[in-house]
Each structure stands twice: as C-alpha cells, then as structure tokens.
Figure 1 (cartoon, chains in turn green, blue):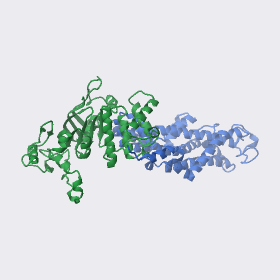
Figure 2 (tube, chains in turn brown, blue):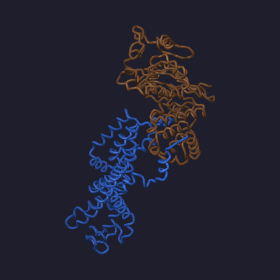
Figure 3 (cartoon, rainbow over the protein chains, first blue to last red):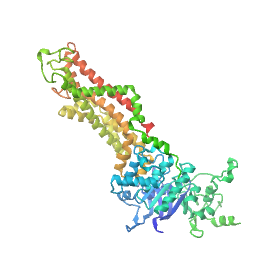
Figure 4 (cartoon, rainbow over the protein chains, first blue to last red):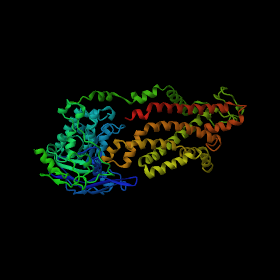
Length: 339
Length: 296
C-alpha cells in the first residue's frame, strides 16, 4: 500500500472586510492508494475548504492564506510534488489528471449547453494528446464502467435529459477519465435519493477496487461513512477532533462531538417515537472570527467541566491504536461507557 | 444494475433541433416569422434584383428623369438624373444590409469579448472595463459618429467600423451580467477541478451559455446599425454617391420632396421594412430563447 497524499499541519484562513479568520487549523492526514478517508462534520466545520485547499482552488492571497504542507507522492517515479505554492499552470495540469473531484450537486455540475459526450471527450483531451475518435471510444468505455446503459447513444444527450443519479454517474465518469490517483468526493450523494445514494456508493467502491485510487470522502452522514470509509476524521471548527479506523470511531467514539453527531443520526428504534426524541446538538458551529476560549466545542458539550474545558484548548492525544482524540476528558468518557 | 431512467433519454435521441422548444416557440411567433419572410424577400431582391432589371443603377436617362413609379420600364420611377430607382434601391440595399450585418458581427464580437472578460474576472479588470463601457455609453452616439466620420474617409468599411465601435456597449453589459451569475455555478468549479484554463472556461464553458441573449441583442443591433447608417449617410457623412445607400438616397430626395415624393418614399419604406423586420425577429428570438427557462 503506498501513500499518495500527505497533508501536514494544514491551516487555511480568509480575509474579509479587513478581518482575518482561520477556518482550518492544524489538520494533518494522509491518503493511501486503494483506501478511503472520510472527513465528517457539520456545515462550517472546514471540511470542504480543506478539499478546495488541496485542489488549489482557494482565492489567491491576500484573500486567503494556506499554511502547512500538502504533498502529492509520485506514483511512477516522478517524485513528490509540494502542492502548496505550486504555480497555477502546473497545478492545472495535476487537476483532473492526478487529483479529480466530484461535487454535491450533480444537477448543476455539468454544463447545460454541451452534450455529455463532448464534456467527457474534452476532459480527456485537455490533458492527453489523443484523437477525438480515441477519446470517444474511451468515453463509451467510461460510461459503461459507471453503469450507464446504451453508452454509445448517451454520448449525444444533454445533461437536462438525465436524472440526478445518472448525472452523478457522468460526473464520476469525467472524474475517472484520466485514472486519477486521488478522488475527492465532496458530499457526492447528499442531493440524491436514498436508493440512488446506495447505488452511487456501490459504484464508487467498485471503481476504487478496480483502479486502486485513494478517496477523500467528505460527508456529514455517518451512514455513508460506515458504508465506505476505511478511516475517519471528525472535524469541528476547523480542527481534527477525532480520528481513527472507521469501526473504532463509530463503535467507540471518545470525543463528545462525535458522540453527539452519532446520536443525531435518526435510527429505526426512534422511528416509532415522537418527533422530540430526535436528538440534536444544541447550538451552532462557532463563528471562526470569535472562537470560544478553551475547547472550541465546550459551549455545546454535554460533558463540559468548568475550569477545565473552558480555560485552555485541548491537544490531540492517542487513545490507543492510532485512535486520536482532542478532548481533555476522553478517559472519563471512555470509562463511563465501560461500566 | 437496475437503471430506470432510460425512457426520457431514448426520446431525446429522436429529437432534432428543428423540433426543439426554442424553434417551435419561434415558429409560433407570427410577427417574427413575418419579419423573417420580409427580410429574406428584401435580401433576395437586393441580390438578384439588379440583374432582373433593364437598367443599371448608374445608367442616366435624362429624358426620363422624374418618371413616377410604374412608368414604362421603370418599376419604381427615376430620380433627378433619370437613373432607375429600383436598380438603385436594390444596390443600396446590398450596401445598407451589408453594413448593418457587418457592423453587428463586429460589435457583437467586441461586446461579447469585453463583457466576457469583465464578467469573468470581476474585481479590478471587470470594474475598469465596465466603467469604460459606461463612459462610451454616455457619449451621444450620433455626435461621436459624425466626428469620427469627419476625420476618416467615409466608405462602407469605415462606416461599418465606426458603427461597430459605437454600438458594442449594450452587448458587453448584457454578457457581463450573464457571466457574473454563470461563473458562480457548479459546472464552472467542476471545469476548474478538471484542470481547465481561464480561457477555456470563458470561451467553452461560459460563452455558449449566453448565446441566447447575444443572438437577441445582435439581431436588434442589425436594425439599429441600418438606421444609423441611413442617418449618417443622409447627413452626407456616410456612403458617398454615386454608390447608393438607403440613407444617401433619402438625402438626394429631400430637395424634390414636393415634386417627386416617391424618391423619398421608396427608400424610406425600404428602411422601415428592414428595420421593423429585424426588430420583430429580435422579439421573436427573445421569446423563443428566454434564457432563464432553458438554462437548467
């Protein structure tokens, strides 16, 4: 298993109306070929910004600034590439080729005025010197691969003639056209029906097995996480608050935020109960310009201990076997569960 | 793998552009079709007309001067020098329509590129370009035209260029406004993510999405360019005799308005017909291509 991407101490900040604020703080992780890493968190926790940072798609300084290191490890002897500070022209060649991305909104991610065949062909030809005919053959292959029936005929259709699930398949086909090492999937199933959602997840898993690409999967849905991720990072207010193998994080969460998120997932057992039984985490993600003192989660935390959690920020600690937790009280929380 | 989405796409395969929704809507627009028929007829007459007539546009028949329309071999009568008015009208039509269409092509190109760049980059570049556009727009177009025409040699090419240089602003503003909303859409981000360059995104991804409003504005620009050409030529700064244009035919006619009114009426009607036809087509296209309903 080889490492394809390392992110070290990533920090991302924005400047707006003369005020600086940090939205991602000290995030580190790595992606392995054939493995899936899930980034989980509420809206505003910094997970999408992280993915845009990796793609080099954040607005240029001084509107945003990125610190730390993002290293793309060379697959076939072309060495490691430091993505931060890479000139735009070189970054552009990597985008779509080595790192591809799919989005939440398949309905609007395709250009309405070009046929899907053209869009796939152009995605290929923007990076490879191949003939139109060859690119078309590849496009048919790709559509077949993502499970679209009659691929030959579909090449001539426009996006509005296809359903949401179909369009997401097309997006996946475009993303996979150049066999990238890394696929970043930013909530790719959120806008889809549950049944279609399952199909798309199946498809991504199958494609990952076939191509050996690494996936960075951004979501707020623990059901999806359990389904697809090998490792999971839970983010809150721009920081990693819990990280580990997906089974460990899901079955034995130690950070109160993760516990809260898991409780907020609607379950079959609660389905018969009245609406008020659906648990939520009180409050909102803090404004990045005005983070609370101490642990940034303490104002919403059920396990908050005065004088401990609201004084100094917790550091991330290993709770055993690479299960990382950012909470001063993880031991008590873990013990509480044992008894 | 069970996919139940086949039927709509199958139907789509059969669809041709001729039966597409915008085309159907355009065909149902009666005035637009009338305009299209009219313009086609005028263009056809201007192209083949001069060959069908017995007299050339420069042939002088002094004895037949001021023949009223319908007399002998002069379909629309003759002018003060006894030249066949029909032959001159058709030749003038060639000039006027050519100037109108060429000016439209040029100004549309100019306006689209400026609007595209301004809308896409926004910030400083966009502000500078759009303020420049506003500044040009503040200039009274006719005076600008007359000043330019006074300094430059007034031939058809120059007139075309001058008209184009003074009428690209509307298209620039339309395109820039469209692009500013389009550039925030997900397919632009998707294009960037797949490694597309700015030029590619502007010309391949964004511009085709504004083609509806551009076509409408361009059609209306033809009508306006024809009017402006007529206006400038009427004032004597445009197309110079003996080459006829609808505008300078009117100029020649004004001193004989009471004795030979057809000299003014004939080119006047031609201008009116051509301009209203283009306007009708423009309206029809606007309804047919209504950008908002078809973009999704």
